[in-house]
Length: 549
Image (tube, rainbow, N blue to C red; front, side):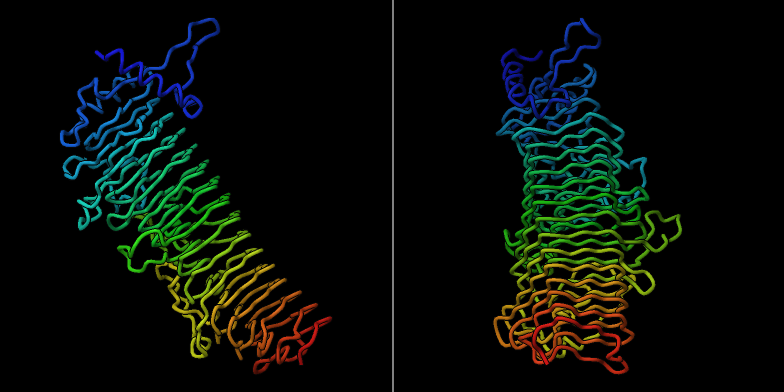
């Protein structure tokens, strides 16, 4: 029998969290008007035999508390201060796990305590991991809240393969999920995986995941109607990650007010993209990926700040990303439409070519990055469509050579997508290839040292608008053109201003046609325009440009 004091203490704690639990079992309910309200039900794990001594396995006691809450029609399983060692526990409908401040749910270090659970919803993650500390499938109205900690003790699984490294949280085909306030640390694999779930709210959690490989912070996979806010996370692998490892899209997702660090990608859509990504909004996030020492994947700096990737079929459309500060990554922005074409089941054909369209990225600042450069790339005949970049300020280190400026960029159609996949790019700012409908406005690029690559290279672009493009280099400027257009059909370059002692403002190459340069300040360049072999000066219309030859 539960002691009166433990019930009273738990009730007081839950009452103080009434607002966050409202809608997730916090409100007393009445089945019909006039019927007495049903009070909250609190199930203290110690009353079911849990010792919380960090040595005794409390798996059975925790599961008994969950089952009792379920039989009661729903309730809160309460963890008072203590360290509760556990293997897999199975959540139930209408049940909240509440971890009191000072409580720690410790994952067992023995893989035998984590049975495999192959879900009914099949995805590519079947090839990864089927074990977890907290598991739920086909559930509704579930929550994990409180001020306590879940520690997976993942270092014990450092050299294990995929099949022997459990997630901390894994929910599949569940709906109405709340995860709030808790601290998550040291997962043997991804920290948390939400697969094909609907109506997910993740708020105010803290994640530290740096104990082994594949230490993602948060993976939202094939989910609909997701809201992530006010979270802080530092991870060795990707941080905030949207995936689509089956043919169900990741759709209607908002992410806001988060602080992120990652030795890999801080904000990422992909790599798996079979179902695509639709209606995604990300805003007001700060990225600083140098919180930790050198990670398991190599360097101190993260791979990228923002990576958007479609490589396994699927469509990415209607994505807006705004108000992001980025520090300590190799590449601030990376957009890739490729064709790895990996099926998500062994018994199916390869997916068809994917699509990326209607992406808006604005109000981005970035510093302390590498000289690789940012890129937006599709494939021949399969362009990225309708991308808008605006109000972006990036400080690059510079140091690019003329040899790097002349370098060829391979297509790498089926290569794993990552921000460094092309090596050092032939543009120190942005390299854009195979894009239809590219708009760049108020782009301010700085180089801390002289760089002998163009700031912007556009190759095979249909419909290009560049306005307010500004560059500056702390050392002597480059003899290379500031902007190179190669095989560009229809372009407008307006109100742009190059750095001191720039050699050439704009060079036109290949089959470029219908270019207008209007109202640019070219007083600091030696030569306004340059035409490659076979390019007629008639392809360019210029007016109201100041200065220059």
